[in-house]
Length: 333
Image (tube, rainbow, N blue to C red; front, side, top):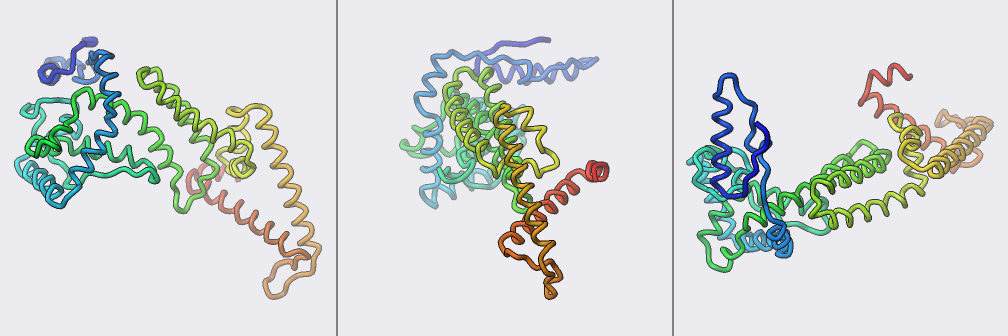
């Protein structure tokens, strides 16, 4: 079985679910998936209309209204609890978000987490992404509450086209969400990973443009902003030196991903720092010993501080490499 092209009607989803079950029962079993073998047909006119309605802004308004009072938050919590007790929620979190049929028995039997909707905040990483994910997870309960609420709230129901656009927007936001998660180490230095991770972010967004041509202009805005940051970072010595000290990066990554001029600049910065460290080391060795601390007495306290800081940084980088790849550390020690 190849691909089946259908629209977004709920009976098409029911048919695909049933077809998947029949294929699994067949002897021998036929490889078929209700989503993987389906091509969804939707007109560009409807998609463009959903974009014009600003589905992300609509999600913000729905979340704000459902969190505006303790009664509404309690109502949502009670609906979730009642559905969990009767096992009437979808088996997978996003089934109801992709379908318009609440009474499909093939999808019932699941539970929802007993949590509230999340607001987004411009100053918090991934808050918009997390807000949409939470709404999609709780959408069966949210839709039930909207259908039984006053007119002012029920008028904000998300249409199937709105939900489709939100699905695509979520694909775009998921990439930077994972990117910032990689760089949020509390105890591990992550400066050396910043530029490689951002380069991967740019590559992923460029590949996504071919899959979501209707959202390519919005992706280009993000790409331009990240490229501006990366170009400034390449001219900053701290990034280059941190990558050189990282055994997993060094100059190989720069040579492969940077221009020849940026690579040569990083090389010259590193040589300059090495010369300064060697000078500090010689100065400390020639000075009189410090009997209290058991280390060479410096002729210049600032130079020794720089030298000690460099030694500590090298030690931390080697420990990081040892913890992450003991085999590589043993072979290259």
